[in-house]
Amino acid sequence: MIRLLNYSVIRLFCYSIILLFSYSCASIPKGEQEHFYMPVSIEEFAAKPFGFDLTLQNFEENYKNVLKRQRYFITLANGNVDTMYNFYKGRKTGIFFHKYGQHDGRLVGGKIRKSQVELNNGIRTGMSRKEFFEKFTDLYYDESDALVIESRATRCTFTFVFSRNKLKEIRILLKRPEF
Image 1 (cartoon, rainbow, N blue to C red):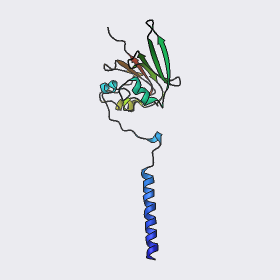
Image 2 (image 1 turned 60 degrees about the vertical axis):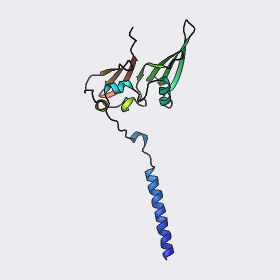
Image 3 (image 1 turned 120 degrees about the vertical axis):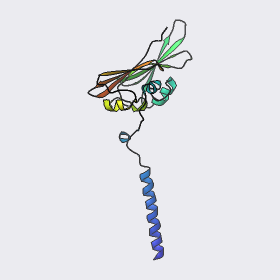
Image 4 (image 1 turned 180 degrees about the vertical axis):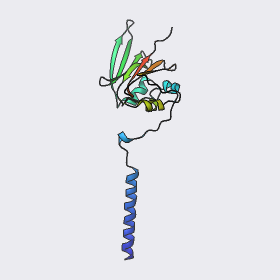
């Protein structure tokens, strides 16, 4: 009787461990995952709009599973070849980089309308206006249809387009260099 009792206790203990382990390893479905971001300043966002140093190589590594890539070669009069990279998802999202010579590519501009392309601090299309303004420490609530943020660090202009209090589109444009 004692031996049978010990076997039952051991069996119950093993089942408990397996059950506990399986619940602790359970994953949350992608749509229900919560990301907690701390609000950032406009300058912090603009310095790293995608959350990493904005180079062609970094962008390609971070979005290779989300966006497709096209390359266009431009032969210049002096014989050098420049390359334009278009990272896209359908017709609604495209982000362009320009690579010249041996230099690393630089962001030229783009339009984001797909929520799979997420900017720094979880900013993405489809989010509410309220959620958008909560992502910043120094950006005050505004009811306008388009909000423009200019960055001195990256020399880019970010235009956030709202419709019916939802972020519908993000436009990125590199400013022309000052001579």
